[in-house]
Length: 370
Image 1 (cartoon, rainbow, N blue to C red):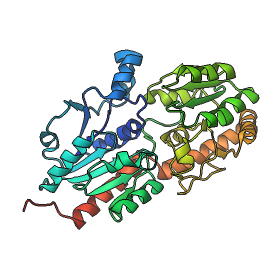
Image 2 (spheres, helix red, strand yellow):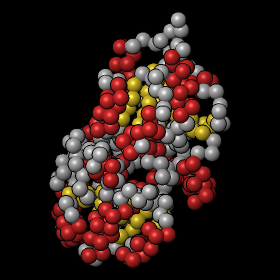
Image 3 (cartoon, one colour):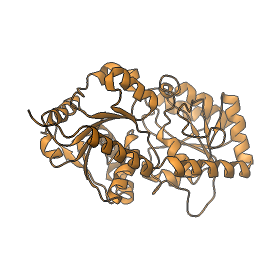
Image 4 (spheres, rainbow, N blue to C red):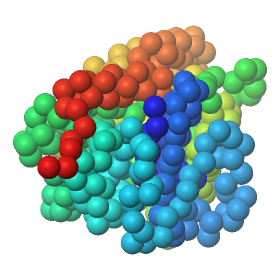
C-alpha cells in the first residue's frame, strides 16, 4: 500500500509532539512493507526553531534512530497533485495550511482514487473551534481524532460514522526500559511551558512537591519565558532546555520517577486524552505519578500502572514513597509496561489504521468524476 502523510514536520519534534507518534507509526508501516511518503512545508515553524536552538546537531538523534524514514519539503502554494499521485491513502494532519487541506480534498472530490483522512491531535476543536471549522473537509472520507471526547465534537459537526478515535501510543521499538540498569536519581519532567495552560498546575503538582520531598528535579522543554525560568530558579529546578524526543528513553533511564501534568483542556474539557509522554514514560519503565486526570476511556489502570495525586500534598506523599520504596517502583514499572505492550504500541495503532482503511475501502469505493 502507498501511504502519504502531510505533517507539519517529521524531522523536528521541537514543540511538535505529533512527530513522536508519527515517526513510530510510519516506521511500523515501513516495517510491514508499505511504501510511505511524508511531506512537510518549507520553513516549518518547528524545524526553524529546532535549528535556531541546536543547529543541525539537533537532527542527529532523529537521523540515528529512524534511518528508514525521510520527508520531502514542498514550497508554499505548491500543487499537491504530484505529491499524492499514485497514493492509496492520504492522511492530512491538522497542523497544516487550510488552503492545502482544501486543495487535497478537492482532488478527492474530483475523483482521486485514494482514501483521504484528516488527523486531529489538538484541543483547538474546543479551545478555538472557529479555527477548526475554517478547514474545508468536504472532500474527506473520515477523521482520525486522538481521543473519544474529540471524536464526539466531530460527531456533533456531522461526522457521525466517519470519525475514529485513534489514540497516540509508544514507539516500543525505541521506547523501552534500558537493557542494563544504571544509577537512577531524582525526578524528571519533559514538557513545554507553552502558553501558560498549566503554569499553576506545574507549581502545585511538580515544583512544590519535588522540593518538599527533597528530590532533585531535572526539567526538559521549550518555550519557557523569562518569568517561567525565574519560577524554576525559585524552586531549585535544573532546567536542561530542549532534548530530542529520540533521546527521551536515555533521559528517563537516569531518573527514579516522572510526573504527568496534563494541560488544562485535557483535564477538563477533553477528558480521557493523555499526553503522549504517559505512553512513552510507561514504555520506558519509569514510575509515573499523575496530577488529576480522568482516564475516561479506561486506557490504563490508575493506581496500578501509575499513581494519582488529587492535590499537591498527596503528590508529595507519593514522591516520598517512590523514593523510599524500590518494591513500589518495581510494581508500577511492571504494570505500566504490561499495559503498554498489551494495548498501546504504535504497532497496535497501525493495526487499527489498516482496519479503518479496509472498512473505508469496502464501504465507499473510489469516487469517479461525473
